[in-house]
Image (cartoon, rainbow, N blue to C red):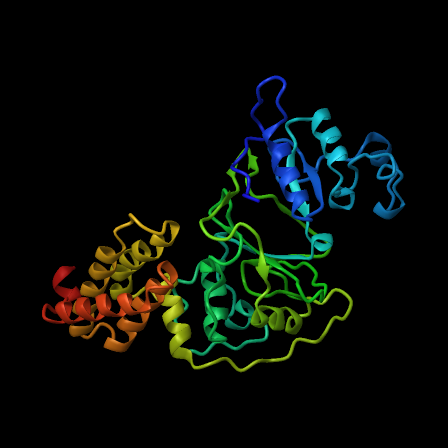
Length: 369
């Protein structure tokens, strides 16, 4: 089944046709993901009924669910198409939310807030970050998640085209995975001092919900990215880290310290994600970003030319002593891998040629500035 196109929860549909937001809800339910309404134009559930608002009580004691009402947010989530029809008939402007726990989903919510970078021991809880890893340009969950992956010698989940990824209106990213082992993970926020996977990376699982792909709020649309349209099984290294950081719903565990892998790959990951902003990195970063952005489409992006330009510039910077040849090559390979993971031989050929050409023209930043 094909994922739904973006829908406008705050736009009316033609008379006689079901709301497009209902189509999203029904598509999610067909995947086996229980659905509940979101308030029109918002990413939060609608208010409880007046009786429940007046009488505070636990969700599992609410009589509204048996009566087919949507009180208590994700606790009312359902797979019943008739109930979904009735809810959206009452309010066609509803958006769709998915209850992660009953759907056995684990969604990484990568944020791009402007918060100050915390101390090194708070960026990846339980993992000391080597002093050689530059953090000057680390600014978002994209960076901290890339760093976590690099330290485990794993691929960056933000570039994982094998699973459902959804761009959020704020520029963040939802990365959907399936808890295929049924371990039962629970939620957390990346800023928590008690349970967190990585700085600015929230975890949505049991006890939480996620905005359905294709939903539109007042701030914009939750757009599925090119690649898989359904969640892949949760990678083992991520599962292990969720266990390590106390995300098991029924079996909380202490947070042990883990010794990371060799720092060079972590350094390359941060550089490729935009960290370590020396003068050389500031010059190289937008070129690397142009390469990484080619992941949005399988062709027609000018990938080879962009990779060649980045390699030529990196070669000139290396020849002038602003970074080592190895750093330049590995940083380029990381960006190329994110955009074209199946073309490793081609990527290496372009990078080698670009570096060699750039090395013949050293790029002295002092002369430029």
